[in-house]
Length: 358
Image 1 (tube, rainbow, N blue to C red):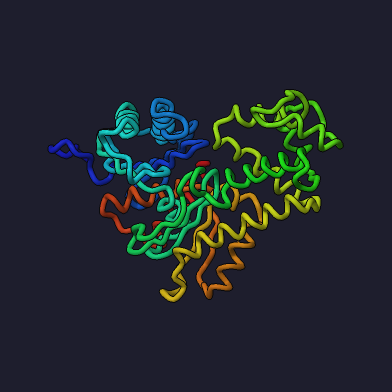
Image 2 (image 1 turned 60 degrees about the horizontal axis):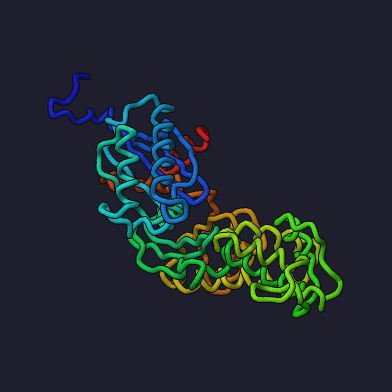
């Protein structure tokens, strides 16, 4: 077919780009208007808040370029681009983060404007094409949204490690660290978490049975500077706060062995996530789907079970769907932003063809 004299790609040559830029990895997919995914790319962290705009931009560029190469396409054929990330809807074009994102996509040869999307909206559309529903994420952070007419209309939590993110990986990791500190200085019962955390931090001194001695090796400002508690404090305070999320799996590991302290942390995390979702839930509006995502809910049965139980108690009768990430939803949003209808058939095409590329 002859090219369009306007310079625009012909309908057969128009493609769409969806990007899920997370704190751990960035994923990109190129697809056709009918939802067939043609190329997939992956790179490192694409979150400009946690990794910095320059690093995030580099990851975005590499993921998009890889997706285009895998599809055998030029970026010039892309007519719509949606980039989903935490806080995405608040990223402005003239901000440092916005400039890095737009520049990264442009360097890959994509010249169409970039639409920034909320990660929770992409997460929702990764599980369902229905325009109304809810999603809950619990990864490093935690938040829930209600979606109506294809847009977010209500949000709960997502306030960051200082003010919220209750039940998140950070929150659980912080509870682990606090429990171990309290056990080492005698404020709380012994816990299997102590050995697990000291090992994870490569603290070679094992837990002391003498709580008085351990208490002397205390937080900054203490009199003695030796022992496992001092090493624990020194190493934890050297980490950026959000890095406490890496210790969340220890709570589930210890809880599985019957450790009461760890089991309490896991139980409280589940209750917190249920509360967050409950704040945006409207079961009376109909049996709309609830989409769950993030490492805490995807990998760990206990908090997922707690959330499901809370939905039943609230009278929710809709489907509960667990998704690994927001890439399907980013692709769906790219189609929707181009004015294309995404029905169940198109959604299933996106889901199945992307799964074949991963």
